[in-house]
Image (cartoon, rainbow, N blue to C red; front, side, top):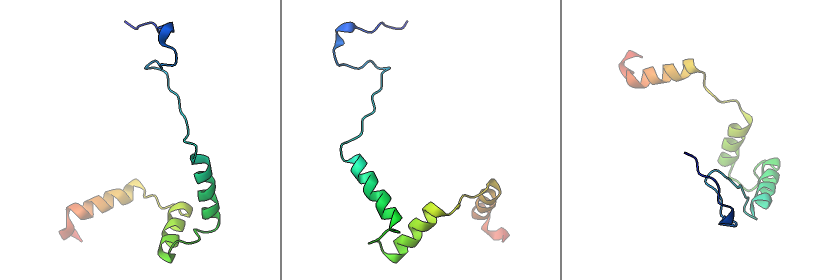
Amino acid sequence: MARRRSSSGGDQLSLLDARVTTAPAVPAIRKAVEEWRHDKYRGATETSQRLLTYWFNTDHRYGMGAVSRITQRSERPWRH
């Protein structure tokens, strides 16, 4: 049976209540990262720039057929 909330709990949260808060530095970090991405990852190595550009600007997801083929190859290397 569910319990009623006690009104004498003050600021104590119920198990069913959720509060989401953002750390004070998070908005500034998000802004800095957005500017860094806009500047094409200025200050990162060329390799890191290429990897970040690939990761965020390329549709690199595999279809199920590709995953299946990769799995088959790794399980039966003698079949190539």
